[in-house]
Structures are given as structure tokens and as C-alpha cells.
Length: 518
Image (cartoon, rainbow, N blue to C red; front, side, top):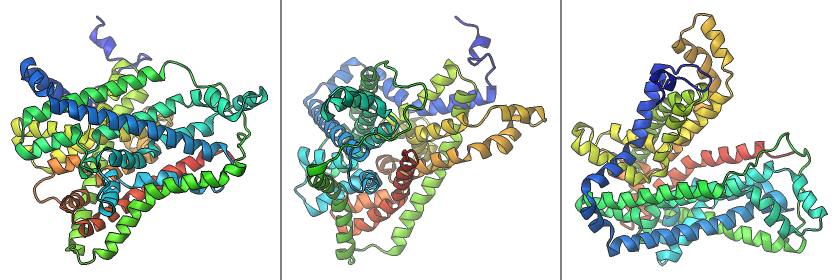
């Protein structure tokens, strides 16, 4: 076993700053708290009780619903996302930039708002087929975005060589392009799968039971801790299986190349007679994904003027959402700094383990995180139960990876030699961080904070379980009205959420445009 001093040194022999190491370890413990709680609770329950609660017909039904919905949605999202990305990047599609924006725009509409739009206009849109349609329309941009970014970065010489050998468009795509899209496609499908495992509002509104909806029902109806926690344990196992499967399917193939590749743009396939059908197909997709929910909001905003929603109520909910979003964004970015700093400035397996541990919170559904924090708060820290602090802790656990990724990228671009120069001039670590490093990584901090802020504003499940009594957010107020079929009253809250989510979509499309070849 390696001696302790060697464990406290990075890959290049530099010692880890003790304060930063302790701070990063505390952040990792917070991120792993829900996972540790579920595992510990399962062990303490005992095999006999665990077997009784898990191996029953209800669990089998929920597992079947979850698996078939996830499998069907992933398949459809993969086809739609990859097909749309190829049309935008590899064909002579008219108005490609406009289509790119429209194909990303569904991300600005939360899935439960999308369900509201469909159910309020078509009450029969429920069950498996309704759920499959609506979640696919909500999540296919998660596959489209990484695939379109990868297509923009591929060397077109490989495709030109395939065409020169006499291979057609389909064979070139299958044998040359698709293998290079593998990491992006698998990553997008993993995101879709994890979002589906965590989805509550959309599926509850569509009356399609899954593990997440069943956990919430158990908690709300009878506060059945053992049954809810056992279902949560199965859900956590599903998350871990998805993470392992994605790693195995991705393989160890290398996709990077030396040099920038060809500087010319890729050859675009002429659609010719297929132009009209392709435009009709994309138009139908956008109409289903955008026109229905947005049209529903407009309809209920106009016809629901008599609903008992005052401007004061709307401003109160918006103020709560904005306040919680701002606090959670600041806290999450602050917590991400020591983890990212340790990973970038002092590489080594301890730093890597601490950095990777922060991603487990993102792999757990919000309802599992909330359930763990509720149980811990009730039994171990009663003073924290039903407080804003516990709710902020849930937000930090759920959305920490969004901040870590952005802070890590910003730190990687900040030359460490500037820190050394500052130290040589007599500045302390704290002064160097404040006067040198933070100004350099400010854009990354801002991007991470913005992503966390948008996620908090539209978060539903953890807020429903952990929000202090009397706290009203846009998401909870929308859910309260829509759950009681008061669609006119729910519309203003949904509209404000969409407006607040729109900037994130704009940033995504703007970043994609920057990487476009001239």
C-alpha cells in the first residue's frame, strides 16, 4: 500500500493543497450522499424484506413500463436526431440555419409543459403511445446537438474517398460516417435515458406509471419509506446499468486525428426531388414538437383570462423561482471550483476520483435525491427539514456536473504559469485566486451558473418534496393547477418558464454556429 504522503501528490509530483483537497472531498461526499443513503438503506432493510418489496407484480409492471418507454424513446430519438443532423450538415436543405434553431428549440419547453400542451388539447393523449410520442418530441434534441457538432468536426476527406471508390450515399453513411458518430450518438442516447428515468411531471400527467411516478405516489399517499426506498434502489440500479452499458458500447476506439483535417467544407448531397418531402417531414416534426405546446399555451392564455390568477401570484412565483435559481447557481459554482481546480491543476487519481464522483447526482432522478434528503433531514437533522437550505442542497447535488464541466474547461484554458508569477510576486493563494484566476475563468463560471439557473427554474420533483411550506415556484404552481385540470390557470406559469428557458436554447444554437465551417 502506498504511503500517505505519496497519495497526497499529483501526477507531476506536486502536493495537493490541503484546504482545496478537503473542500473537494466535502463536495464529493455531498454529491454521493443520496447514492450512499439508498445503498445503506437497502443493506439495513435486510434481504428478506428487500425481496418482499422488490420481487412483486407491481415492481415488474413498473420495470416493464420503464424499459419499454426508455427503449422506444431512445430508438426514436436516435433516428430523428441523427437524421435531422445529417440533413442539416450533409444535404442541400434550404434554410439550414433556421432549421438548426428550430430543431434545438424544443429544449426550451420542459417535458411536463409539453405534456400539458398535448393533454389540455387532446385528453386522449395518454398511455404508452402518448407518452412515447411526447417524451420523444421533448428529448430528441439531446441526440441532435452532439451529432450535429460531431458532423461539423469530421474530416470530409474520408467521405470523399468512399464516394471515389464508388460507394453510394447510404453505404458511405453506414460504413464511414456512422462509426465516427458513435461517441456522440451513445452520449446523446445516454442523456435521453437518464432524463426518462428521472422524468415525473410529464409521465404523471399522461397517466403512465414508471418508477419515478410510483415513488412519488408512495411518498405522498402514505409516506411509505421502505417501499419508496426499495423502488428508488431499483431505479438507481437502472441508472448504473445505463452508465456501464454506455461505457461498454463506446469501446476503446480512438476517434481523434493529428492535425485539423481538410479545411474545405464537406460535400452536400443534392436532395433534388426529395426536397419537398424532406421539408414536409421536418415541418411536421417541428409542428408536433413546438406548435402544439406553444399553440396550447397561447390558446389557454387567451381563453383562460377568467382564471383566478393574479399578477401578484405570478410575480411571487417568478420571484421565488428566480431567487432559488440565483442562490443555487452561486452555491453550485462555488462548490464546483475546488473540484475542478484540483482536477486541472493537480492531476492524479485522487483528483480524478473526486471529480468523477460529482456526476452521480446527475445520474439520479430528482425524486430519489429528494427522498434521500427528506429521510436524512427527518431522522438526522430535523432542523433542516422543510428549509430552503435542504432544497438548495438538492439543487447542488442534481446540477453540480453542469457547473463542474464549465469551470473545468475554463481552468484548462487559464495558463497555470500566471499563478506561479503571482506567487513569485508575493501574492497568497487566496489573493491569486481573486485577482488572477477568477477574472480569467469568469466566462466559464457564468456559463455554469446560467445552466444551473435555468435547470432550477424548471425543476419540479425535488421542489415538490423539499420546498418549505408556503414556497411557491413557477413549476410547483403550474403543477398544482394542471394536476387539478385548471389549464387556463396553469398557462401563465408555463409561459413564464418557457420564456426563462429560451436564453439557454439561444446560447446552445449560438455556440453551435461558432463552430460552423465557413
